[in-house]
Amino acid sequence: EDDAPSSELTADAVSAKESAVREQLNTQSKPEALRAALKDAPLGAAPGALVARVDKAVMDALSAFKSDEVKKSVGSLTDDEKDLCMKYVYKLMATPQENSSAILLVWHGALVESAGVGCIVRVLTDRAQV
Image 1 (tube, rainbow, N blue to C red):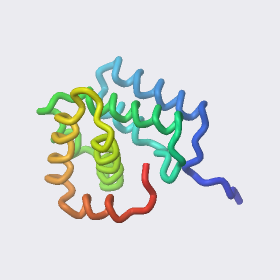
Image 2 (image 1 turned 60 degrees about the horizontal axis):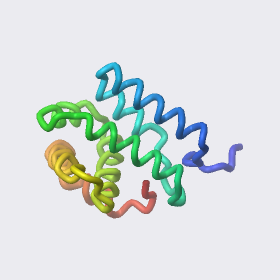
Image 3 (image 1 turned 90 degrees about the horizontal axis):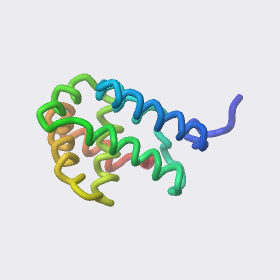
């Protein structure tokens, strides 16, 4: 039995995630870049440099979409991916980067439209934060 949490974060895992996101963005596969960024999210991991790098990879993936592409992309996500994406939207809104707020609001609107307000409730009540 493995006692290590599934969200344990290593430098190698973060580097692999960053590479996967970059590779998908370079090939113009934005939905796959987003999936790569959301995969194996460090739920409950202590804040630090590695978590910041994961946050940046997610933001890179989210910001690669044009506003009119977001709704279609959200529709292709699973319910769990929508909830996870919303977790990142809230986290990234709390520490906005230059020009990030507008695209995060677009994502928020599309996620609520697709997953309903239950998505917000699940994110705000879940103790396992990203």
